[in-house]
Image 1 (tube, rainbow, N blue to C red):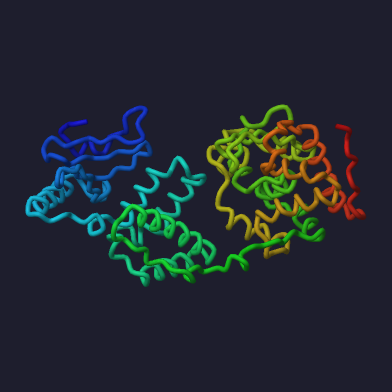
Image 2 (spheres, rainbow, N blue to C red; image 1 turned 135 degrees about the vertical axis):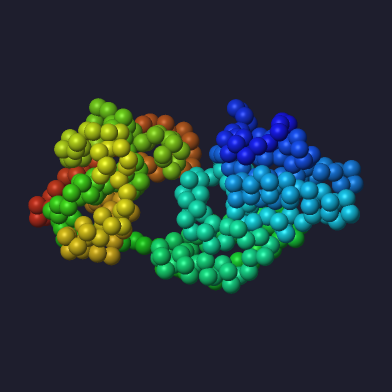
Length: 386
């Protein structure tokens, strides 16, 4: 689509309806186009012919490279082509350009696109985003990881490395010359060391259950009663709750399908005690935004409870273990967690297991209640007739 590009248009341009990306060709500099994706990512491209073959050169992202600069770069590239020189993609594309191209092309296939973009925005772009990708050295990646590790810990440094490695490898499959500077051994954590199998002891559960530290205390107890992931619960809305069920929509579920969790009486009681103002159930801003700042909340909570060295995800693992102690059948417990049952059974068995999941969550709540009250061994639940 041709039009006279202006700074105002470039700032507000959108992809046309039904298109993953739209090219707006400049009428002032032939071949120059502003490429706008449906995610509002914008990059500059130059379309040209070489030996009768149409080619495209991507050389910067907007607004990092403005309209005037893009026209200058395009004229320089066209002059080089006219002189018989082939412009090098690797010499002009920055790491941010490549990252944004990766997200634009692969975003629909990725499960955690928003998280990946957040990591790039927070950790990668400020340090290496403007560097031409072909010039990035291994030592620069190491320094980037040092910064991330110092600020956010070794686990986040390893996750950042994994993301950058994936993007660089993707770029290498599309480039004739690029070779990723990342090699084995650069991770800040070992996978075998990072894997955890910790569950909370009965004594720790009592401390958690009897500690009152504002809304976060109820949130932690709700995680235990529902075996939910941290963000699944944190972002839940009142609209997702109906008739004693919490329906996690497919758009927020890791498996991409709706997940119905029948809430135990204890879980429902916690929700009933919360203010109903705003959209979000768990919020410190009147329901306007979901709860966040987990690290700060957890430090305060752990200090009050007198426990440490556990993650919020380990509440989910603890809940699953308690279901087993209560005699909940494995299939029912796995469905409570939202895990997909594989194999032939997973394909043909479409029973929703609502009653079985309800029994499992009641058994989980009963187990926690007996532990907190100082009772004896957890009593196994009776298996209802199918």
